[in-house]
Structures are given as C-alpha cells and as structure tokens.
Amino acid sequence: MDIVQIVGIGLIATFLALILNDQKPMFAFMLTVFVGAFIFLFLIDQIVAVIVMLERIAVNANINDLYIKTILKIIGIAYIAEFGAQITKDAGQAAISAKIELAGKILILVMAIPILTVIIETVLKLIPQ
Image 1 (cartoon, rainbow, N blue to C red):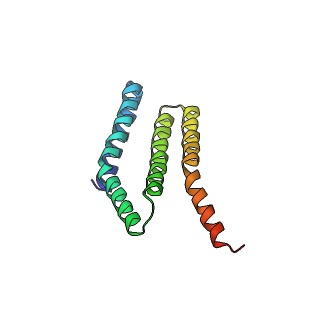
Image 2: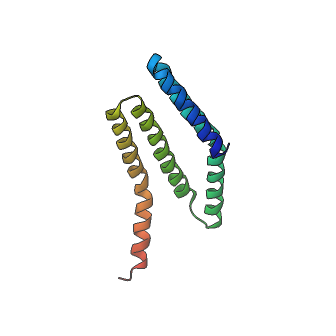
Image 3: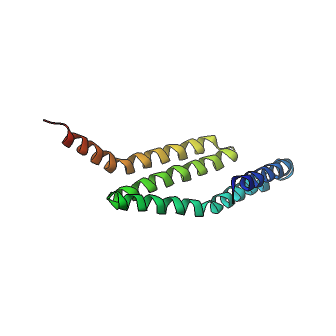
C-alpha cells in the first residue's frame, strides 16, 4: 500500500469520524482506532523489510546481534508509545497520553543503557592514558 492509499483511507476515516462524532462519539473514536490499527498492519511488510535489512547489515559489519535487537526494540517502543499516546489524545485523555509518552521514554532509556555502556567503554579504550 503506498502513501496515496494510506492518506486516502485516513482522509475518508477522518470525514466519517467527523460526521459520526456529532451523533455517536464512541463510534467515531472506535473508527479512529480501527483505521489507525489498519494502517499500521499494512505497514508491517515494510517494517519487516527494514528489520531484515538492518540484520543483514549487522551481520556484514560483524555487530553483535544483541545490540541490533536492542535498537529494534527501542524503535518499537518509540512507535508503540507514540501510537498509544495519539489514540489517548484522540479520546481526550491528554494526561494519560503524557504518561504513556513518559513511560516510553523511560523504557527507551533503560534499554539504551547497555549500548551506551559499550560506546563509553569503546571510547575510553581509544583514548591514550
């Protein structure tokens, strides 16, 4: 599915949600969530292609799989947290949205610590003492 189709689906869903919002706000919200998930599912093939490409590059560069998997998990956390935060904002729950974003940032920081440690250790080895 290319971007024109995705934007088209998004615009149609937006117009339908605006119409439904006056009559049935819950249906409008459910439509929004459904279309967001639908678009995400159509992007799975592209996401898998990127993951395969990154793993291939990591093997060719002789990079430890643990680091690549950690980076992919960090990217996944960022996207999932953003998706969840946007859905809760659409539902009018800005406070919960902010907490989802904060949780995502903290989880990213926790997962990044081993990579940061390796980078710092590598830099310290390069500096003459």
